[in-house]
Length: 178
Ligand SMILES: Cc1cc2nc3c(=O)[nH]c(=O)nc-3n(C[C@H](O)[C@H](O)[C@H](O)COP(=O)(O)O)c2cc1C
Image (cartoon, rainbow, N blue to C red; front, side):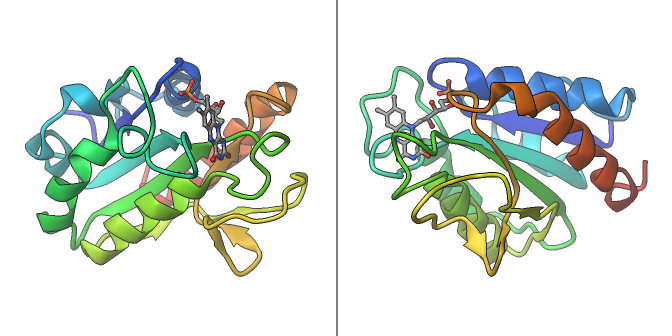
């Protein structure tokens, strides 16, 4: 079985696409194909020691499914299961998609929400990412000067995505002992 599981939520498909780019950048059979969180159980996640979890921010900074009219049921429905899970001993890297131009006051806020949930469940979160190169007013996904995971803006900076993914994945390889 692969060592690293990738799970994502997505409304219009951008987060799914980035999840696939991340898997491809590892170029390793140790990284499983991305799975939509609305098709996953908590046991599917707990089967891995290393996890990569991705979410867009939709509707006032909420995790998709919670406060928005999203097509996809998504992370919000899964959060109660995560909150009661024991993620101690798991290394988790997070990535978030957002739109810094239209939603600069709540940029990738759902990434911050996901971080809070997995941290409280005991996970060790790796893969923080510098906030340079983005223009926004406010974000709940910041820890000091760093985002708590990779931040991708497919709406305004899609040309930067391949390089961002490549750099982030390179930093995760040693964290995930790959
Ligand atoms: C209704 C709606 C609300 C949004 N709210 C936010 C937001 O609060 N913060 C943010 O950074 N991006 C926000 N976005 C932008 C999305 O996060 C972004 O387009 C993302 O790439 C969508 O990913 P998906 O295609 O996987 O659903 C919003 C988009 C929509 C359509």
